[in-house]
Length: 121
Image (tube, rainbow, N blue to C red; front, side):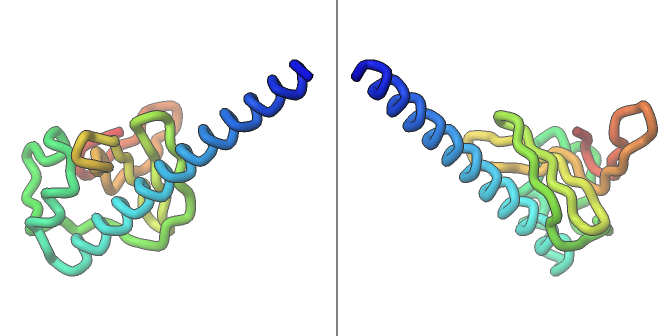
């Protein structure tokens, strides 16, 4: 009886954690898609709103030209995420205001951190 109750409790916790991870993944993906759409449609105010404060430093949001594409992979680690599209890698952070892009136009460099056109990982 106790064993059954413990297994039920473990299953409930696993489902709750899995549900949170899935929700975070969905929200990070949505933010990345919204960012890319704002860049593509020339909406600089929205582009800047979707960047973290640090990523905005030294960036002219009205003249960003970044690779775009469909989202292929979203990986979330707590309050950080990496979103890979057909032609780009974006890094996001979860802030009190929601998911924001901390790095865009990023590409891997062998044995080194990603290099990004905007912000960084």
